[in-house]
Image (cartoon, rainbow, N blue to C red; front, side, top):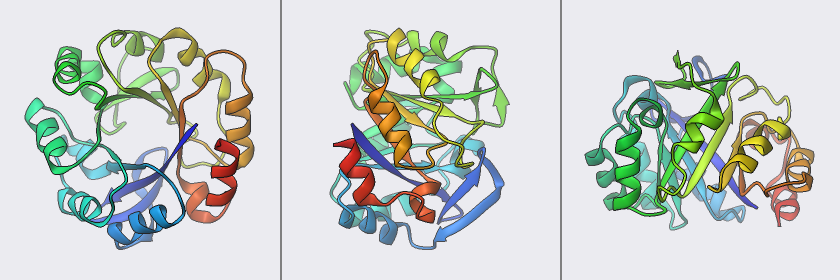
Length: 240
């Protein structure tokens, strides 16, 4: 299982928020490249970067901070937040992003996601962000009438590299993973599933790995990693 430590960017700083609400942001590091370097030094193989301002505004807002991260480390970066066009995707891939995350487009303009997946095979991830059983868009500020499995199945055989399933109701709250919800999606599609939202302790990784059915491919580490609820060595040992 691959672990993806998260760097959530708001106003150029590394923050954690509760349920995606920007006003709840706690700053954990004022230097995104320093945070990225720490993640590398801790032994992780990927970094999950989200432009929170960009997700809400529908355009890149923390582009300078993202570029600083790309300049600071050589491990793969997956990036989401405010990426809404093929030109946006191309720009970031050319800048060195290994995987571009598309969420709002997956609901509103799935054809663009499919086109992107053809142009950049395995370099596109679909973010399926779930609140109250429905998929949210526009930086989680708006809800759709679609459920997670419906959105996920749209991209079967499209060349998408991963589905990042976020449980908004648990995100940032340290309530533990809803393993069955992630598992139900993993069992319904052939695209690798990455679990996000709610990780509280190493037990969550253990439970993800232990569930019967299609294996969960990865997990995003957020607040628990920043507050010390889970240590990098613990997490990597269990994931391996």
